[in-house]
Length: 213
Image 1: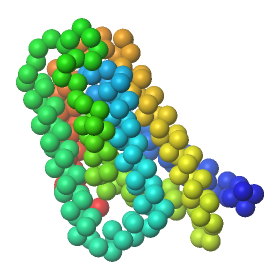
Image 2 (image 1 turned 45 degrees about the horizontal axis):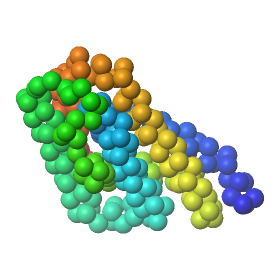
Image 3 (image 1 turned 90 degrees about the vertical axis):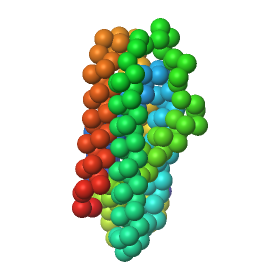
Image 4 (image 1 turned 180 degrees about the horizontal axis):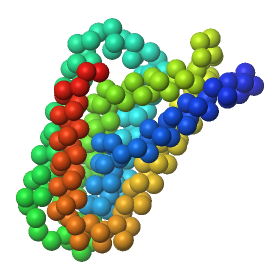
């Protein structure tokens, strides 16, 4: 333990970099916000679990050196990028359909069309795990906080602290945007919010498909 704590000066910058990355708006955060405002707190926290699972997957993969493998086999990364872009465009299509459907928001926070627990978890996981940029973010964090020659316990500590923070941030977004005030804002600007979600997912999907990673 003492040997691991000796690397705290290197771990701290990595932790700060992670905080900046995790609170920045992206497909995952937008999914939590949109789900929480549309279907309520429980649904928002459920999709957060899936996103957290995706984050954990990339964290462990980065620590295990999978990023190097993906860089070596460029086709695997290219396929992952294409799949992720198509998935984001699919979410844009679903959001656009919600805008076209219109109608009044049910009085209850969680309406009858709330997706199932399984579908929300899988949706959250899919959003995060199909974003190849996430693994490079984790790779940078691991590399920043774990200098050459550092014991494996340093990587374990980085992942544990960052993932705990990420879990709290994801759940915090779900709770914050499922409050009565947030729901009131959503009722008043439902079409604008869902339209913005559709536009964001479309932009993110196209950007991912056309980017050079």
